[in-house]
Image (cartoon, rainbow over all chains, first blue to last red; front, side, top):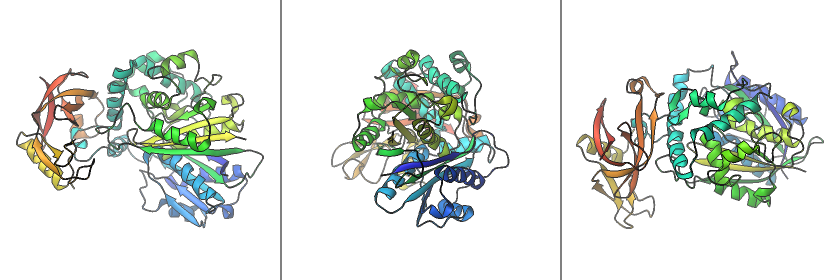
Length: 376
Length: 120
């Protein structure tokens, strides 16, 4: 049975002087320490990618740098879904008996390691090189196209979207490691400058430096008992030109994860859902069924997604405010879920929670990976 | 490096033709072009679109990805459902909304003639 036995991270934000490898090493060391494991105990390593350091073999480069000699190692590239995909694979490696302790790690100095222009341009490359990039789209433009259509079909307003940015900022205010912690209002979001209409600056996550790591083990290594109970994936398109806004894949991935976990969606009491933009989290909440279509913002206004609500959402502040440094940005959701379930979320602790749903998406809502975590 | 289908598509744009594919086996319209039908694996044939369609979604890009596009900003990008049964990304005239009926024209940007949706 796969358990999340350790978690570790750096703070997110502007971390001068760090590199991809120094950030990864800091998070990995913290995760091993949390799990009570030594380097020699790790027999599997999975790592993400870094746009600042695009090495062909990042997992083995990191293994050597950090001092590991794993029996299984490679990197995964699935955009924002990479962290959840690594957790799913780590589950399988443990379940199959291939590994006993899999270290999953990612980090990137995306903010200080390259210019903002270079990041915007390189991320836009998830678009089709022949049939989309000639028109000059950006990542926010792809999501803006989804947002406009989704808002049109389901009666969602820009103010509805803004509510999620405000909630993420409030949550980040309780986390000392978050990139953006100053409170904002819906009026601030609506008044922020347009990036790709209808998305404005505060509908978009920041670019951060940071790293995250966790250990998936075949058995607990401490008194904590948080296990990975189910996982599911779905991919229905890569490019926004091909996407069906009514069925993006999030719901399908989630249903597969719930089926494997043998739990009903209604049993979930904690959410950690990818939120690269406000539309990302709103559309996925509704497609997965945590809110009826067009009603997520109404549930937010009722307090359902607050820390003390029925379904606390991204209590660390999510990508929108905790920050986004690439792969580790999506892993931060899993780390927060583990900390909530094990009662270690400090000022963010949402009471006693038992069953968490974690979801990552990559590309333009293209690759979906859902996870169900349970405190035994 | 573009494939032969992309070269043929963009040559069409340069000649004022919006080219797309239809599968000879299953009849499905296909965009973007490929050497096979992504639905049934059959062989697609090229056709020329009448260029009329409906806006599926549209955005105005204020923050451009490159200096080349920054000179053009703000500019509108649309997803258009062409009447022949395929969807594609295009540039768009200002002021279009979801559901707007459009006709695809072309405008020059650097070396390329780019499809642009204009109000019909």
